[in-house]
Length: 72
Image 1 (cartoon, helix red, strand yellow):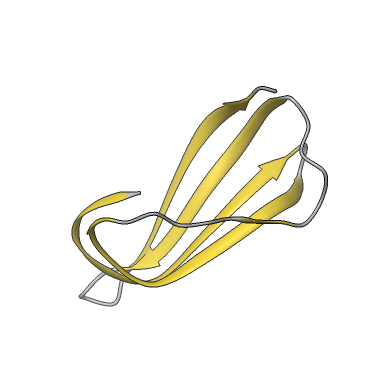
Image 2 (cartoon, rainbow, N blue to C red):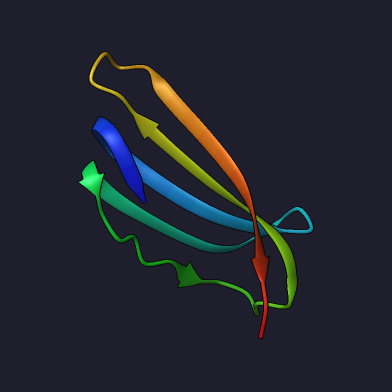
C-alpha cells in the first residue's frame, strides 16, 4: 500500500461475492507499507474487491477500492 500523505486508522478488507474473506489494519501509513491480511474464510480463484479505509490529517475519512484477481 502506498500513500502520498500521512494516514491513520488504516483498515483493509478483501471481499468476494459480498462476503468479507480477509481483513487487515495498520495504525498509520506514510509512504509505502505492507499490510498483512488475516484470512477469515477460504479464498477461491476469481475477482475480489480490495477496500482501504483511512483517516487523513484533517479528519476526513478516505475510501479506496480496487478489483484484484486471485489466481492459484
